[in-house]
Image (cartoon, rainbow, N blue to C red):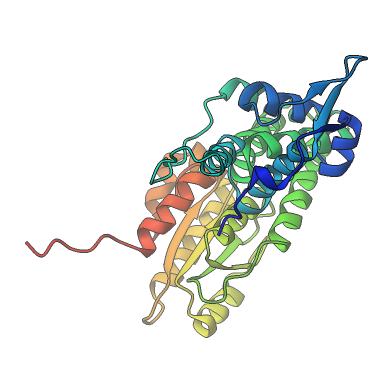
Length: 326
């Protein structure tokens, strides 16, 4: 349950300069100014010298918002909406009985700009700048939106440039490795849901491109699924043995080339012959995005071209609507 923010619990005297707020909250000055400009989350006063000064109340609000974005996956606009409800309740003003449904932030230009900045930083091997850009993206848009709208498109663009011969394989590997490390660190601190439906994820035999699948594993775990991630180049015989032992609800595999897509087709055929209870089979990846005709060869369900569409498809497959008795 989201903690209540009570503004009256904190002093409203201007005390802290922006450097102190940066150090205390971990937010950059650019993020602080963006939040102030777009969402009016703070009301800093000006010192006699013209510098911003923040109160204890401002500091507490910033900490509260950062926890909502980082720990609960809200976008900053969603977190601010909740904060305003809490402030309204504290002031005795009426708050809506039902919180509005989450909306995608209407700031595509900001997301595109961060995506382009991330591409430039990664192709320049500038890890510190990339870290700064990701911190900005997470703070402004929330974890899942930042992954879906900033990180994933950046990787796709770098991969496409590599295929066109515009960037080196070394640059592509650096970018993929950097993003994979960031995603894996987030997966490792996301709670494991032992009671959720078990999903087994892995790359097709011979396929070594796993970043998109790591992103999907992260999203699925945040949705409450019990995710077992097998990684790159999953051998067919080993996979079948584990499926017969673990009885997962679903197997999800990805392929990035026509060759590994053919191997994935073989896996799907074998899974389709397993005795009941047989897992559902879902698939995706660059190979099926580029060559739509490959999808019909797989004994399973194509999950879409993005992690977000894959989440919706998995939910629909595992929780089909009840049949109409009429």
